[in-house]
Each structure stands twice: as structure tokens, then as C-alpha cells.
Image (cartoon, rainbow, N blue to C red; front, side, top):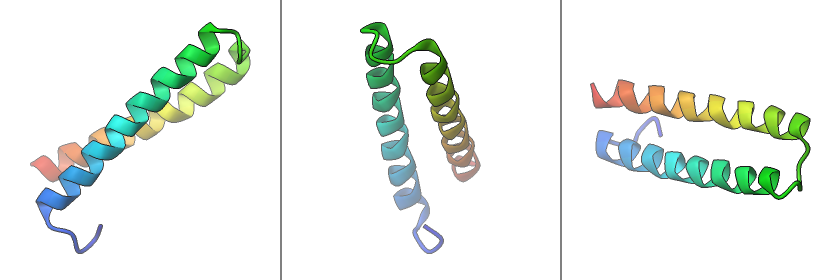
Length: 64
């Protein structure tokens, strides 16, 4: 990613954000169907949210 141009970086980051959003939805469905207990769901969703914030921040810096 260091040598990619701005448009490529934006494309890769947006793709990653879409995949993280899909992952969030999948884990939410697993939690709602009681496949995960609350403790596991909270631990995983906090990490996924952190990754989403990082990607969003990175995208914001590139878009400046």
C-alpha cells in the first residue's frame, strides 16, 4: 500500500470497510440466533469496531 496511488488506496480501504461491515452483520446474526453468548459477541464486536474506526481514519487521511 506504500507505493499504491491515492485512487488504489481508496479502493482497497473501501473494499476492506465493506467486508468489515459484512462481518459485523454476520456476527450480529450469529449472536441473535444464540450461536454466540453475550461475552464472546461483545469481545469480537469491540475488535471489529476498532478495525472499522482505523480504516475510517485511514480513509479520511487519504481523502484530505
